[in-house]
Amino acid sequence: HADTAMYSAKDAGRNTFQFFVHEMNVRVLRRLQLESGLRRALDRDEFTLHYQPQVDAETRALVGVEALLRWQHPERGPMLPGEFIPVAEESGLIIPIGDWVMRSAFAQQAHWRERGRQQLSVAVNISALQFARPDFTDRVAQVIAETGADPRRIVLEITESALMDHSPSLTQRLQDLTGMGLTLALDDFGTGYSSLAYLKRLPLDRLKLDRSFVRDLPDDPDDVAIALAAISVARDLGMQVIAEGVETQGQREFLIAHGCRWMQGFLFSEPLPVQAFDRRFPPSPESE
Ligand code: C2E
Ligand code: MG
Ligand code: MG
Ligand code: MG
Figure (tube, rainbow, N blue to C red):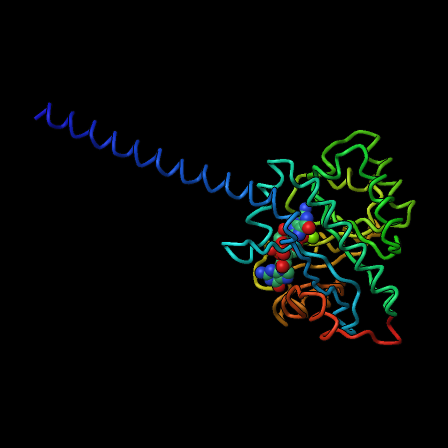
């Protein structure tokens, strides 16, 4: 009995092990395929940007748009950033991809600017790795010069992880960017670990309340507490605040009642290809 028990345990172990190796190979393979696909995606022109409106929820006026990356994978079809940005970051490909995003989004701003939408600002997500490059500020200046974008209508969305480096050069870099006229937004606010005292010292213009804290408003007392804290921090530090992921009237009303008028979410619009955006949100003479 002891023997058979031993053997079967061993066999089971071996099977589990082989199964595990197989699973691992599948994962590694998928990861490698994704990486080589990403490597070719720029040359093959498989990326596009969609634009999601950010609105003043009281007046419904457009505050700006956020550019969101989409990848049309030749075999797998449309892919969202959550599926490939982590691989792009691990492989370093986020640098050329992020550069493409900047060039496209800034060019779009310049295009809107020429088409009578001078006031429309375009927000671009910047990866921590991209932001950490010593030449980041110069690259931003170069792309502005090349595309003719108005720096006062460009918003850079950076996450707390990009601000973890507490060196004086970080503050200098942020100051250089705001000095060029750009707006700096802290993305996914509340999900990182920065202390408020630390944030206070940085020249950030805008705070984006992460959608994980918006989802269960107004019923979840924890989310209510976090949302109210974020709104009051923004007010105290003289920052604009915008709530992400607003999907319901209940969320909208709660946020307005507590002093957060700027919102982005499916309640107003999902991210749209540029032509669809222009159709759904045609320029209006008084706001643009
Ligand atoms: P994010 O910057 O916080 O962008 C907002 C995300 O929330 C977008 O997801 C948007 O589609 C989604 N969203 C907006 N409103 C709603 C809503 O009402 N409900 C729900 N459920 N979702 C909503 P998306 O486009 O999948 O992007 C996910 C994340 O990927 C972004 O989060 C950003 O961190 C990153 N990302 C997107 N584009 C780029 C890019 O060009 N460069 C880099 N480095 N990161 C990017
Ligand atoms: Mg963002
Ligand atoms: Mg965000
Ligand atoms: Mg977010």
